[in-house]
Image 1 (spheres, rainbow, N blue to C red):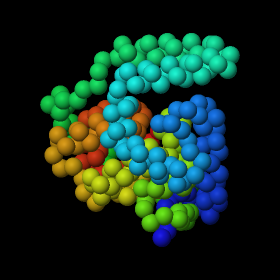
Image 2 (spheres, rainbow, N blue to C red; image 1 turned 45 degrees about the horizontal axis):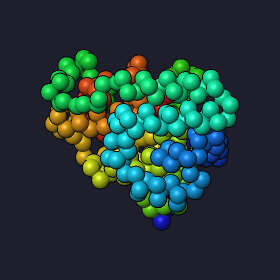
Image 3 (cartoon, one colour; image 1 turned 30 degrees about the vertical axis):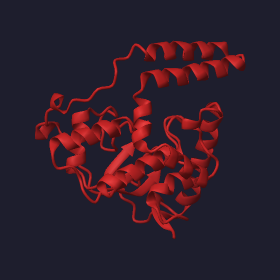
Image 4 (cartoon, rainbow, N blue to C red; image 1 turned 60 degrees about the horizontal axis):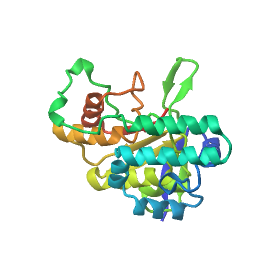
Length: 257
């Protein structure tokens, strides 16, 4: 089976998107030591899908919140750069590893987060916005009359990041993590990906959190994965802003800087 996905505003968008994803994956993988299996940018879709199955999103979340594990990863990076004679970069990693252990342990208490008044809630999203294009006449971003659709050779939308080499945050979040996340989100909210462009994924959920506490829990997990929504005014969204956005929006966007 094949799955369609929006990738751009014109027929040139397909080749441009694939080339951009592939180039990004190549550049990012070169900066990540090959023995860092949890973050390795694999070369084939099958390998990325297998890695996503081996490290489900719940487990990945636990890894990102484990201070000792994250510190050990930075120490491994430091030793890697040291072996290459890049002592300055190695020192940065050694200091980073030490600093991680000084961070407070990750905790989440729903009662610490109160619902926002209407005027402070983030603008809701009701259509895919990543494919917008600049209209010189209106001097505004608009939905184009023509878009590019890529057909991925998989019946599972959650596997699309594996087939498009989609990686973000300088390779720290490689294709297998995006695949694991989309699998996790589909299982909980029936969400399927509808658009993918460099640094942005958009999904349509079949259901949404209706209670503030469940929205906060979902927001807490998503904030450990994505940096902001496409409607963000500051590109640094609070948990409360995320929670209100997830309740109010029929389309969810996940963005990285």
